[in-house]
Amino acid sequence: MQCTINRAQSTDVLLKLVPGAKTFFLLEGKQWVLTLGYGKKEEITLRALRLLVRKAVSLLKSQQQTKVSLTLTEWLFPQLKLNEAECVEMLVTNILLADYAFTRYQTPPKEGFVQLSRVNISAVRSKQSVQSAVNRALIIGKETNAARDIANQPAGDMTPRHLANHAKQTFARLSVKLVVWDEKRLAQENMHAILTVGKGSAAKPRLILAEYRGGKKHEAPIVLIGKGVTFDSGGINLKPSQYILGMNMDMSGGATVLHTLAACARLKVKKNIIALVPAVENMISGESYRPGDIIRTASGKTIEVQDTDAEGRLILSDVLHYAKQLKPTLVIDVATLTGSAVVALGERASGLFATDETIETTLRHIGLSVGDPVWPLPLWDEYFEDIKGTYADIGNVGNTKWGGAITAALFLKQFIDYPWVHLDIAPRMTSIPSEHLAKGSIGAGVQLLVQFLLQQKKQ
Image 1 (spheres, rainbow, N blue to C red):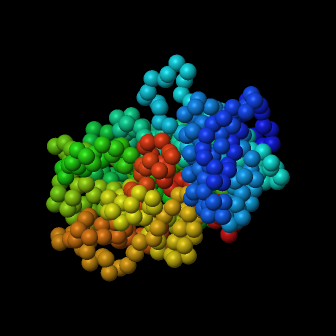
Image 2: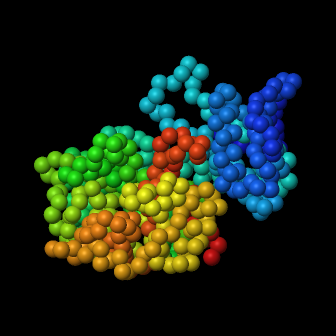
Image 3: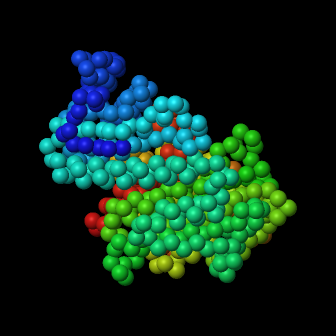
């Protein structure tokens, strides 16, 4: 998609944002006009504005329109306190998100799939800062959509090996060093939790390690860890039919982390960042791990398997421990970890757990500002009583049916000794109709983490 500034053309659909009006298309002379109506100007919120952008894209595509021009001043609202560059970044990012659809396996219609080819933004005064915002938005939007794309892939085409190959292709032309560990190296590193979860599948596990160094040579890194369960059958504790479809997206955390790193490399973020993605399939076979098994993790701590469908925390335990060797200033893990997070928060915010209240507040504010919301849940040590093992150090689901998102976070906390954030993105794994996004993955976490890391470079 091409994005221009102050270069409207007669072939563009003119998008007008009008308070109190109805929404309609109209041919004025030789130019189509889309009037996008909304309520009262003084009552508009940033969340509502994002939805209006996406709605406009849906309406344009429904009429086979691929070129549009809008007037920036119509999108600037005093109560939102956005400058021109901030508003344009929001507009372009959300146009890209709304324009995405996963069509790789569909037969194209004769006229092809409809996608926007050109967006023009008129009435721009601060052209230089707005152009920088456009460039930034194009990178963030495209990398978010790339994360959506691999999360949407059928599991047969996105095994641990495929995910590792995708990482190689993604970073091939970027300043990112990539290493992939196979099962032999995982065994050498005593990563028995990863190996145990993956042993039921013919598709063997991998650990993807990607390193970007945009900061000073000896500056300690920020580490991003993404859950990469490329298909989760539940294992011997098999998921019911209504929950197993869509479990190709259980590697959404891994997709988020890989494409956050790619965005940071493209944006030349001045930080050292390392991404770690344990990639496995949780499948059923005669080799599968069993309820009642006890796993000795890379940390030396033992885990009692109470439910084979709580596998994500197992593979993360090995990698969280490994991250200690990297001497990080901060570790952020991203995972579609628990259905309990969906019960607690619904489908409009990811769960946020943090050992540092300042970082928690920063992430919450960034999430709201970019439309990638997170909301804090407690990380109190008292909850550890609920996950003590009977025959091992820790149980992988614990002894209570309550607060599952919290007890899962407490489980992970047993493997850290550094500043840490856990994002449970299960609530936002897929889109909901009111978001005006295509069905499937929404790339939760990419915008949040990229903006957070961009802010870190200023500190």
